[in-house]
Image (cartoon, rainbow, N blue to C red; front, top):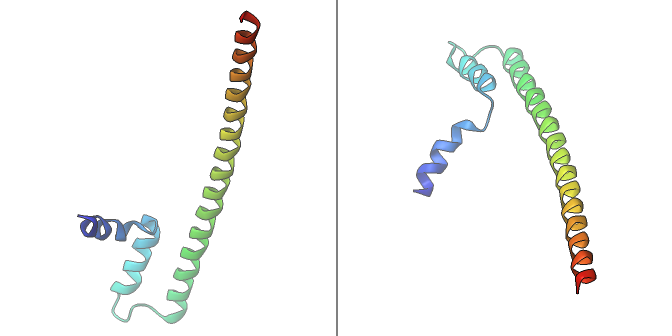
Length: 88
C-alpha cells in the first residue's frame, strides 16, 4: 500500500504549470533546442523558488501565531490557578 501511495504522489512534486512545460519540451520532435529547454528549467526553478519563499513565510506566520496562542493559554491557566488559590 505504501508503494502505491508513493507512486501516486510522485507526479505531484511540481506545480501543474511546470509539469505541463516539461511535457511539452519533451514531447516535441527534437525536444526543443537546448536554450529553450534551459529557459524552461530556469522558469521552473524560479517558480519553485517563489513557492518555497511563500511557504517559508507561511510557516513563520504560523509559528508566530502558535507562540501567541501558547502565551494566551499560559496566561489563562495562571489566572485560573491564582483564582483557585485565593478561594482555598
